[in-house]
Amino acid sequence: MKKILNLLIFCLSISLFSQKNLAVTYKTSIANLETNAILIASKTHSMYEEGIEFKEREMNEFEPNSFTIGGWDHMRIFQNLKEPEVLKIQMFKNEDRFSYVDKDYYISDTIPKLNWEFINHHEEIEILGYKCKEARLKFRGSEFKAYYTTEIPTTFGPWKFHGLPGLILRVSSVDNPKIYWEVEEIIYPYEEAKIADVSAMNFNLSMKEYIQNFDDLVEKRGRAFAARMGSSYQSIPKNMRRQMTRERKYEWETW
Image 1: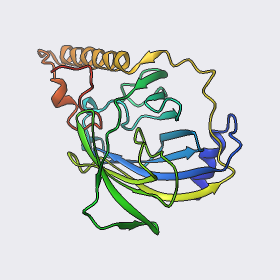
Image 2: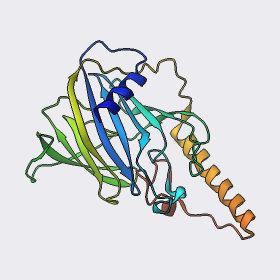
Image 3: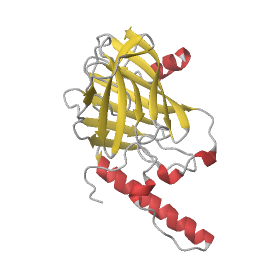
């Protein structure tokens, strides 16, 4: 795991923030599929990346129509605490025949404010030697349970999670136990960690536009498959298609 961490950090070295940084590796899962993820954070910026090294999967363990942002595709999420609700997402083209990421995407995702509920009646648990408290969050149609430690003073966490008074070590979906993030290694402080400078990248696609493009591609492929099979096409409702995803319903959707 340490070799993986060092390799990822090297690959992500575009420019440096001068202060001591934090490096965290996670194991994350969606629909029985596990992959490695890494969080690099300074005092004010963070970069989360997942989908680089995949563990062996069985194709019958998941349905390709169930995936959208944050599945098994290679992605990076950048955050700046000056605008904590504006996430810059870099999605990389995936040649896997099940993937719906048909090209590189640069997405600007303005997410709803994360209103964490602090769970104070539970006893603290210990993760990797750190005492952790529990918090819960309802986010885009899903509910999540998180454990964070105030022993590492950062507001960042894996994926799109942030805003707790300490590093987030574990997150799991209350709705789907197959969706989770589990810390594997923490190096803090870590002076060698480097964070990419995204100021020159053009994140010109909104999340709403990306999801609309994604849904259109799903429909197009579904119709083409039905035509090849000589059968009629029946569209899968979005609420059913996203049952296994992290984000089930977006704030602009009214269904």
